[in-house]
Length: 214
Length: 244
Image 1 (cartoon, chains in turn cyan, blue):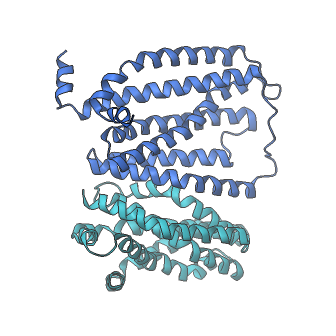
Image 2 (cartoon, chains in turn yellow, cyan):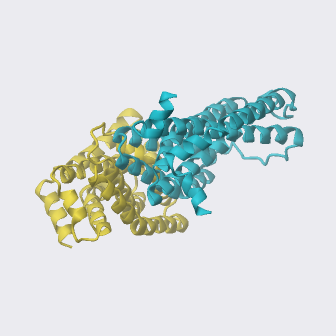
């Protein structure tokens, strides 16, 4: 629990990360009408998919940076060696990532949806799908960040590694929102969330041990 | 009995004993592939619907089958290397990843070439093609991580973890792509049931599949032996071998 407060305190002290994710999302969403068409009838069907993809990209970018400072000053190693169960540490890091990256986007979803001319009921379903789906994105992104932490290479490595795993969440989330809440996709998304919550922290623990032994 | 398995885990034993397999595999794959190519590309009948272009199937289908099973084999090797910490399993993962990636590319490319005469387009976002594309990205991920993380043991373990996570996610990805496609199936493109293939067609196909597998194991074995020699370059048995 103290770990969670530490993570949140770090985030609150430098909200730059969260603000950057937000600005990135808003900018990319703004690029699409500029690139395609300002016609609302053409933008509106694309809206759910575009906002989901932008959320996915923001999560990937934020995850890259999130573990770097912890690795650099050795606190990641301390967490691995500490008495805290390692799966809990990883889960807390994912929660922190979700709060700092996905939650602001979730709260901004009405504005992003408005930029793409989406009606309110579709925005509501979009937010519902993001509520269920974005934690899964965060879990996978932090898993990927632990796989690549400390490697000096381009920041495109993390997306290359993790993007295939994000495809089911993307498909289920967008389907659920587009069909206006058809129960099948909702249940499947919730099932995926439960599965990820239960299994990924342990996978992340394995990877964290590998990461600090570099 | 376990000792028999255990012996194969030693690089020296593996290298010496597997040498005998290479000419066998080379001969088998050469003969079977050669016969399959001759039978499939020249003798087998043309399809009544697709004409001569159905012959791409004799390359595309074995490549697609091999793409999926090579990922499974890579992930199993990765699991073995993680659980039992066998260096040879780690070398096996490292050597099979490029082969698998290239075979997946081959499947994608031949499928795309087949698509043009069959569907009129080089690419269509249907379930199987998209799944194969994602499979290629999974291979690329393992390759990229291996490349970026270097040659150390931890790098191998990270890449192995990625391969295993990929295998566990593979059913989820496959099912979600299937659901996605059944919803978005465009009206003009319907998946019709293929009529049963006569022996004159599935005969060469089977032969090509077997030949592809033989070639795959040959290529993997050659690469694995080479990688083992590279890794154990300072050990006695390699030095002795070099002097001969």
